Length: 89
Image (cartoon, rainbow, N blue to C red; front, side):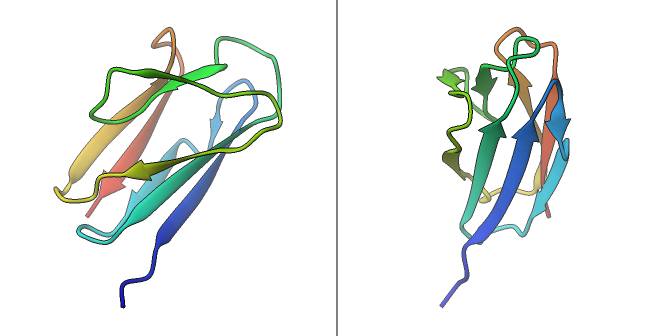
């Protein structure tokens, strides 16, 4: 049985941590927890996606991450100003 990989990013004027690493081919979920109204971080655009997903204040949002291909994939705020990265290896 494959264990689910998880990571949590705190959204507080920036993404902390701003890089997360998952193993290729194993299921993964990334949770964003926005704790501040600072900046344009009320939305996130996930790797390999163009949809802007809302990040409600103090309400963690969890997303499935595609780990089928190794590489580095950016996620950004809704205005493409704040950046983070998912590394699949």
